[in-house]
Image (cartoon, rainbow, N blue to C red; front, top):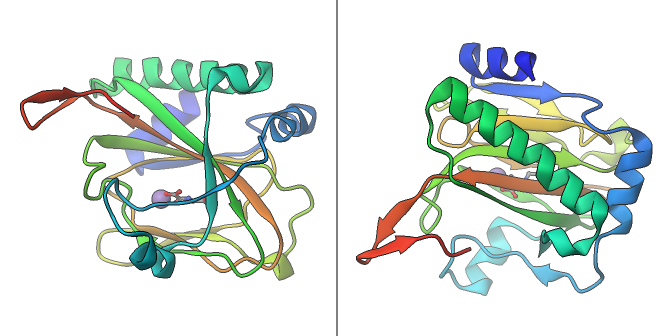
Length: 200
Ligand code: OGA
Ligand code: MN
Protein backbone atom coordinates (compact mmCIF):
# COMPACT_ATOMS: atom_id res chain seq x y z
CA UNK A 1 0.00 0.00 0.00
CA UNK A 2 2.87 2.44 0.78
CA UNK A 3 4.36 1.83 -2.64
CA UNK A 4 1.01 2.57 -4.23
CA UNK A 5 0.67 5.86 -2.39
CA UNK A 6 4.31 6.85 -3.13
CA UNK A 7 3.94 6.07 -6.83
CA UNK A 8 0.67 7.99 -7.07
CA UNK A 9 2.44 10.96 -5.50
CA UNK A 10 5.46 10.86 -7.77
CA UNK A 11 4.10 9.62 -11.12
CA UNK A 12 0.32 9.46 -10.81
CA UNK A 13 0.06 5.74 -11.49
CA UNK A 14 1.20 2.39 -10.11
CA UNK A 15 1.47 -1.14 -11.47
CA UNK A 16 0.84 -3.52 -8.57
CA UNK A 17 1.87 -7.00 -9.65
CA UNK A 18 0.62 -10.03 -7.70
CA UNK A 19 -2.06 -7.94 -6.06
CA UNK A 20 -3.95 -11.25 -5.68
CA UNK A 21 -2.57 -14.80 -5.67
CA UNK A 22 -3.37 -17.06 -8.64
CA UNK A 23 -5.83 -19.02 -6.44
CA UNK A 24 -7.72 -15.86 -5.55
CA UNK A 25 -7.78 -14.75 -9.17
CA UNK A 26 -9.26 -18.10 -10.19
CA UNK A 27 -11.94 -17.80 -7.50
CA UNK A 28 -12.79 -14.32 -8.68
CA UNK A 29 -13.09 -15.45 -12.30
CA UNK A 30 -15.45 -18.21 -11.21
CA UNK A 31 -17.81 -15.54 -9.86
CA UNK A 32 -18.37 -13.89 -13.23
CA UNK A 33 -21.99 -14.42 -14.28
CA UNK A 34 -22.77 -15.50 -17.83
CA UNK A 35 -25.05 -12.75 -19.11
CA UNK A 36 -22.62 -10.25 -20.63
CA UNK A 37 -23.87 -6.92 -21.90
CA UNK A 38 -22.44 -4.74 -24.60
CA UNK A 39 -20.37 -2.01 -22.95
CA UNK A 40 -21.57 1.57 -23.23
CA UNK A 41 -19.59 4.80 -23.23
CA UNK A 42 -20.82 7.51 -20.87
CA UNK A 43 -24.37 7.05 -19.71
CA UNK A 44 -26.50 8.26 -22.59
CA UNK A 45 -24.54 7.48 -25.70
CA UNK A 46 -25.90 5.47 -28.57
CA UNK A 47 -24.83 1.87 -28.91
CA UNK A 48 -23.94 2.24 -32.61
CA UNK A 49 -21.39 4.99 -32.06
CA UNK A 50 -19.96 3.17 -29.09
CA UNK A 51 -19.24 0.05 -31.08
CA UNK A 52 -16.58 1.97 -32.98
CA UNK A 53 -14.92 3.07 -29.74
CA UNK A 54 -15.05 -0.10 -27.67
CA UNK A 55 -16.19 -3.64 -28.38
CA UNK A 56 -15.89 -5.38 -25.02
CA UNK A 57 -18.76 -6.74 -22.92
CA UNK A 58 -19.29 -5.93 -19.27
CA UNK A 59 -20.95 -6.97 -16.01
CA UNK A 60 -21.16 -4.59 -13.04
CA UNK A 61 -19.72 -6.04 -9.81
CA UNK A 62 -22.07 -6.63 -6.91
CA UNK A 63 -21.04 -7.93 -3.48
CA UNK A 64 -23.68 -10.67 -3.75
CA UNK A 65 -21.85 -12.24 -6.71
CA UNK A 66 -19.86 -14.24 -4.17
CA UNK A 67 -17.30 -14.02 -1.39
CA UNK A 68 -14.32 -13.41 -3.74
CA UNK A 69 -16.11 -10.41 -5.24
CA UNK A 70 -16.97 -9.09 -1.78
CA UNK A 71 -13.30 -9.53 -0.78
CA UNK A 72 -12.13 -7.70 -3.89
CA UNK A 73 -14.49 -4.83 -3.09
CA UNK A 74 -13.18 -4.80 0.51
CA UNK A 75 -9.65 -4.41 -0.81
CA UNK A 76 -10.76 -1.52 -2.99
CA UNK A 77 -12.34 0.04 0.09
CA UNK A 78 -8.92 -0.10 1.82
CA UNK A 79 -7.40 1.70 -1.16
CA UNK A 80 -10.20 4.29 -1.09
CA UNK A 81 -9.54 5.04 2.58
CA UNK A 82 -5.75 5.28 2.12
CA UNK A 83 -6.06 7.47 -0.96
CA UNK A 84 -8.40 9.81 0.89
CA UNK A 85 -6.07 9.92 3.87
CA UNK A 86 -3.04 10.87 1.77
CA UNK A 87 -4.53 12.96 -1.02
CA UNK A 88 -7.68 14.45 0.54
CA UNK A 89 -9.57 13.45 -2.55
CA UNK A 90 -12.95 12.91 -0.92
CA UNK A 91 -13.42 9.69 -2.84
CA UNK A 92 -16.94 8.69 -2.04
CA UNK A 93 -17.70 5.39 -3.67
CA UNK A 94 -16.36 2.70 -5.97
CA UNK A 95 -18.01 1.31 -9.06
CA UNK A 96 -16.51 -1.53 -11.10
CA UNK A 97 -17.31 -3.93 -13.89
CA UNK A 98 -15.94 -7.17 -15.19
CA UNK A 99 -14.99 -6.80 -18.83
CA UNK A 100 -14.60 -9.52 -21.43
CA UNK A 101 -12.66 -8.81 -24.60
CA UNK A 102 -12.97 -11.55 -27.20
CA UNK A 103 -10.56 -11.98 -30.09
CA UNK A 104 -10.41 -8.69 -32.01
CA UNK A 105 -12.02 -6.63 -29.24
CA UNK A 106 -10.45 -3.29 -28.31
CA UNK A 107 -11.08 0.00 -26.54
CA UNK A 108 -9.80 3.10 -28.32
CA UNK A 109 -7.81 5.79 -26.58
CA UNK A 110 -9.93 7.58 -23.97
CA UNK A 111 -9.99 9.29 -20.59
CA UNK A 112 -12.16 7.68 -17.93
CA UNK A 113 -13.74 10.92 -16.76
CA UNK A 114 -15.75 11.63 -19.91
CA UNK A 115 -19.27 12.91 -20.31
CA UNK A 116 -21.58 11.38 -17.75
CA UNK A 117 -18.61 10.15 -15.71
CA UNK A 118 -17.02 13.44 -14.66
CA UNK A 119 -16.92 12.32 -11.05
CA UNK A 120 -14.33 9.62 -11.61
CA UNK A 121 -11.01 10.50 -9.98
CA UNK A 122 -8.99 7.30 -9.52
CA UNK A 123 -9.11 4.28 -11.84
CA UNK A 124 -8.24 0.67 -11.08
CA UNK A 125 -7.85 -2.09 -13.64
CA UNK A 126 -7.32 -5.65 -12.45
CA UNK A 127 -6.35 -8.51 -14.76
CA UNK A 128 -7.33 -12.16 -14.69
CA UNK A 129 -5.48 -13.81 -17.58
CA UNK A 130 -3.12 -16.67 -16.96
CA UNK A 131 -0.11 -17.24 -19.19
CA UNK A 132 -0.44 -14.13 -21.32
CA UNK A 133 2.21 -13.96 -24.06
CA UNK A 134 3.22 -11.33 -26.58
CA UNK A 135 1.17 -12.98 -29.34
CA UNK A 136 -1.97 -12.56 -27.27
CA UNK A 137 -1.58 -8.75 -27.63
CA UNK A 138 -4.44 -6.84 -25.93
CA UNK A 139 -2.04 -4.60 -24.02
CA UNK A 140 -3.18 -1.52 -22.15
CA UNK A 141 -1.23 1.44 -23.54
CA UNK A 142 -0.97 4.43 -21.24
CA UNK A 143 -0.23 8.02 -22.35
CA UNK A 144 0.29 11.35 -20.66
CA UNK A 145 -1.79 14.39 -21.57
CA UNK A 146 0.82 15.38 -24.19
CA UNK A 147 0.28 12.03 -25.88
CA UNK A 148 3.64 10.55 -24.92
CA UNK A 149 3.43 6.80 -24.44
CA UNK A 150 4.28 5.96 -20.81
CA UNK A 151 3.64 2.23 -20.53
CA UNK A 152 2.40 -0.79 -22.45
CA UNK A 153 0.99 -3.31 -20.03
CA UNK A 154 0.12 -6.91 -20.85
CA UNK A 155 -3.06 -7.89 -18.93
CA UNK A 156 -1.14 -10.29 -16.70
CA UNK A 157 -3.05 -12.29 -14.12
CA UNK A 158 -3.00 -10.75 -10.64
CA UNK A 159 -1.90 -7.31 -11.85
CA UNK A 160 -3.64 -4.20 -10.55
CA UNK A 161 -3.07 -0.92 -12.35
CA UNK A 162 -4.08 2.26 -10.49
CA UNK A 163 -4.01 5.79 -11.91
CA UNK A 164 -5.53 9.25 -11.62
CA UNK A 165 -8.42 9.18 -14.08
CA UNK A 166 -7.95 12.72 -15.39
CA UNK A 167 -4.25 12.45 -16.16
CA UNK A 168 -3.81 9.39 -18.33
CA UNK A 169 -5.47 8.66 -21.66
CA UNK A 170 -5.23 4.93 -22.37
CA UNK A 171 -6.33 2.30 -24.86
CA UNK A 172 -6.75 -1.45 -25.09
CA UNK A 173 -5.08 -2.80 -28.22
CA UNK A 174 -7.05 -5.45 -30.15
CA UNK A 175 -6.64 -8.74 -28.33
CA UNK A 176 -5.88 -12.09 -29.90
CA UNK A 177 -7.10 -14.12 -26.94
CA UNK A 178 -10.06 -13.89 -24.61
CA UNK A 179 -9.15 -11.24 -22.06
CA UNK A 180 -10.76 -10.62 -18.66
CA UNK A 181 -10.40 -7.54 -16.50
CA UNK A 182 -12.14 -5.61 -13.75
CA UNK A 183 -12.21 -1.88 -14.47
CA UNK A 184 -13.21 0.26 -11.52
CA UNK A 185 -13.48 3.91 -10.50
CA UNK A 186 -13.44 5.80 -7.26
CA UNK A 187 -15.82 8.70 -7.59
CA UNK A 188 -16.44 11.92 -5.78
CA UNK A 189 -19.90 13.17 -5.06
CA UNK A 190 -21.31 15.58 -7.58
CA UNK A 191 -24.38 17.68 -7.99
CA UNK A 192 -26.25 17.34 -11.24
CA UNK A 193 -29.58 18.82 -12.31
CA UNK A 194 -30.05 20.00 -8.73
CA UNK A 195 -29.82 16.45 -7.48
CA UNK A 196 -27.04 14.78 -5.60
CA UNK A 197 -25.42 12.36 -8.06
CA UNK A 198 -25.02 9.15 -6.13
CA UNK A 199 -26.70 6.76 -8.57
CA UNK A 200 -24.64 4.13 -10.40
C1 OGA B 1 -12.02 0.91 -19.22
C2 OGA B 1 -10.63 0.51 -19.53
C3 OGA B 1 -8.92 -1.14 -19.57
C4 OGA B 1 -8.67 -2.61 -19.52
O1 OGA B 1 -12.89 0.02 -19.07
O2 OGA B 1 -12.27 2.12 -19.10
O3 OGA B 1 -9.86 1.37 -19.88
O4 OGA B 1 -7.49 -2.98 -19.65
N1 OGA B 1 -10.26 -0.77 -19.41
O5 OGA B 1 -9.62 -3.40 -19.38
MN1 MN C 1 -10.57 3.36 -19.35
